[in-house]
Length: 393
Ligand code: SF4
Image (cartoon, rainbow, N blue to C red; front, side):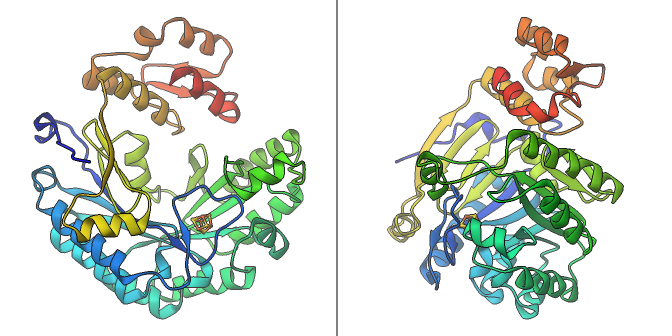
């Protein structure tokens, strides 16, 4: 499909936050039973995909929208980016840093799975400028990892974290999951305690959700997957905030916790509904309200790029009210909430004026609070965030 970017989005507006750059690597060694991400199992990822990605970096770095802006973060996610070698990934990072304008101290993150890293690979990433590593650890229990269909063990997670420190990573995130089949609050407490032993700068703690089309969804349908009861899962959530707060990791987003100053800048830009350019199969971009996605299948993506075509799949120009609602819903994910003054400056709309009775109702139920600083979820609102946000979409 042909996509024409409206000229109105080209010129940066006053006060616009710097955009983020995302590269997607859609390959994993095997597929986890709960996964709904755009990823494909393969043992040896194709060099042609990296060449296509490099081509897209060249194309977009010369694009007027990018030339007018200075990027603040680069995030290589997946899939499992570290399924490629250290030198291949380092080459991508260097190409991005040389091709786009970046701020003086960009945050550069690479996602990795424990059984795909070594000190050599991680050292190559550090040398290329990667300063943040996000490791998909999920659980410190081989039994639970096997149940999730993860391709690594606890011992491999331990080696990976130690290797990252040896390679010089001083900013590490560990992804963890709770609400797993066969997990209780005591087992989750054990995973959190084991994770804290490594003094991570950041933890992302997600409750398992069953997504349509995944093997887990099929098992649930057949009544063959026993998930923890709702109260047990809520207890795991409460445990998380208490334990991590005591360890000095403050909750700053519904599922994310960080040491002071270690909040993920890339994701903060996303939750603030800032602009981002996403390159690679299935990646989505949002350039000042103009959103487009690329084809999901990596072979189709590579083929289109090789044929000299842009691999677009869909595009839409979001109306102002839709962008306003999105900013509210995304912003409420952060514990600090969303600034009403900023919303008014950006969209000429305020939450109270726009939502009227809906917001009043949520306030009366004690789920949100509107103050001079802005709109945010309350302590009671956070555990039921999804229901609250659904009313504001
Ligand atoms: S490692 Fe991540 S992206 Fe890959 S299959 Fe598992 S959940 Fe999906």
